[in-house]
Amino acid sequence: MSCAKPKNNPTVLCDVCREVRARKAQEAKALGLCMLCLKRAALPNLTRCFKCYQTSKQWEKATIDARHGKGKVYRRSIRERVIAAYGGKCACCGEAAYEFLALDHVNGDGKQHRAEVGVTSAIYRDVVKQGYPPAFRILCHNCNSARGYYGYCPHEKTSYAKKTQP
Image (cartoon, rainbow, N blue to C red; front, side):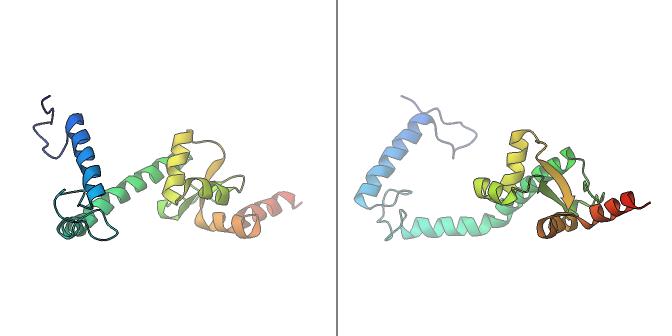
């Protein structure tokens, strides 16, 4: 059976080569060899030899900025989409500066939601996945913090006082 590896990308393996590579890696692991080069002895408590370990560390160090930058751009784009979908401004006071805005759980179940999905960026992805449900809204950090600490926002308290005055 011939290899169907793409000619334009030599790092991509075809399905046949991937299976052969995985089988060889398992055999190497069983023998205590490096799972990357399949030649040298693996370091204690690792699956790689010293040379492959050093090479991967150098690659990580050389590409860290590019890898983190892509993730940062992606997370920001997801956050911008969510903020735009919920009106792009604080539902309480009208603050529209992106840096001041946060996603608020209307029912106050943010702690439970974070426990289920994980970090903040995962919450934004989950909101997109759910199709922007009405259980969320955008608040500025001041309004969001006040609701969390006091159970109400001072903007609502003043607007309520204005409505009840004769």
